[in-house]
Amino acid sequence: MGHFAMRLRYLADRARHLSPANLREFTEQVHRVSKAPTPVIIADMLWCSVRYDMGFRDYAVWDIRLLKGRERATWMTHPKSFRITKLLNSPDAKQLVEDKPRFYRDFADDIHRDWIDLADADTDAVDAFLKRHERVLAKPSNGFGGAGIDAVDTAGITDVAAWRDAQTERGQTLLEELLPQHPELSALYPGSVNTIRLITFLDRDGGFHVLASVLRIGNGGVIDNFAGGGMFTMLDDDGVALYAGVDKQSHVFQTHPATGVRIAGFRVPMYAEAVAFVERLARRLPQIPYMGWDIAITPTGPAVIEANHNSSVFQMKPTVSGVRTGLLARYRDATGLDL
Image (tube, rainbow, N blue to C red; front, top):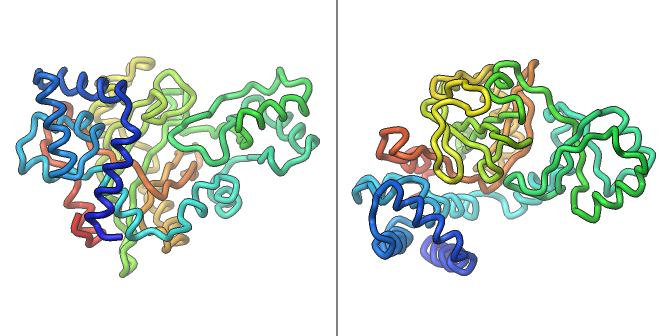
């Protein structure tokens, strides 16, 4: 499939799934920063979707209404990311990395946590697992974006067989222990494991590229995902947070509301080790050169949470960063694609 046909297919699919509630959310976000009338915003969104291959959420989250045309043209977008995935990643990429039990088995030495799959384990094995851990995460075996993840206190489980049946009915068939996180990250926010997302590309000559580096921070929940109520900020090449945190609704946090820790300037511990760790993982899957890696930093080093064959795109809002250009050139230079 050619680039143009892929663009049309992606835009048509997004249009079919766009709800009135989401459109209202996007236009309200844009209006808060631009004060433009709703019809003007919607018309400009449509123009940018065609001219710059840009999703409506991209337009809202990255303050595109405030930018000039030459600045808009520098932003990496989710439709462009989708094309990289389709053009360069293996067709079996999703099966290889987003089937979590398979991924955990393949990368058993790198996940650094105990886990069990309710679909395969008998009741005695599940009972033994629950007795080993006071609190566990229950998640779908093929979920994404933090959806369907709950923390479970195991002390209250008396009938393991019945509990297992209920978990299976809910689709939460994967159980895993909660990883301890590095004390410095716990000081930032202790209620979730705060992870880094490294979006990477492995080129045909074996060169390893970090396209974007993101610190994801929980805020009131057990997960740090942007879609699950958390916030994010961008990191520099040394693992230092460049800006304040931003959540899905474009709320800006100079300090974490739960701990008071300032976000801009926060240094991720063991960051260099995490980048080297991810490069080693990426080289094990050369057939999936474009990947988003979620990495926890434990007291003893990095651990892989999951890999995403079709990573979200992260860039910081110009109204927060003061930077009016995006990361498109970085993606183009690494992939060699005309995006």
